[in-house]
Amino acid sequence: MTITTLSTAIGFILISLGLIGIIVPLLPGLPLLWLGAFAWAWGNDFQQVGWPTLVALALLVGLGIVVDLFLASAVSIRAGVSWRAIGGAILGGLLGGIFLTWIPLLGTLAGALIGAVAGMWVVEFRIRNDVDAATNAVWSYLTGVAFASLINLFLALLMLALFFWQAYWA
Image (cartoon, rainbow, N blue to C red; front, side, top):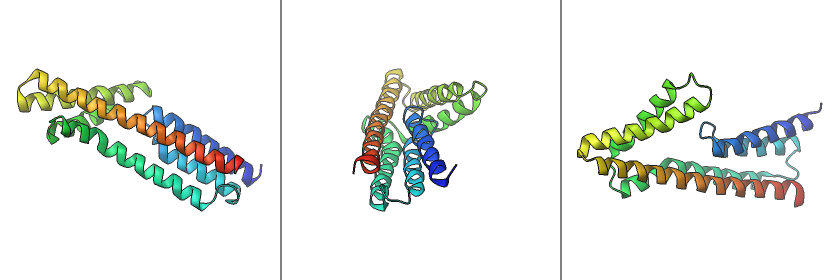
């Protein structure tokens, strides 16, 4: 097996994991897509996919990371959710993911989701003493997370289109 074949295989494995990571939030989808494109380009001596393409892909990864970090919080803040409730969602997601790790893969994901929702709801309820306000806080947070996921899916498809265009059709 040559280094070209090996790096191409590693590139496609990383790209596949990146696509899974777009759907399963346990894996960093966009960075894995970029690493896969880089591995593929390196194995082909950067002939088809060069540095300008890799820089463009890296900018899309950066945009995706910013969207992930700030969109759910921004939608929540716009809906009137407190920063403490967002912190409760983060802490609850971490604890939920840890406590349900005994169930392979799905336990961590379900635990993180349940923990984030429960953490935000409990903190917002304690602050406002209002069930409706706490429930609205959770819905706004989940809306932001869903919207961020859709944007990341679009960015992943754009990255794939750019990569395959450069690799095979340019």
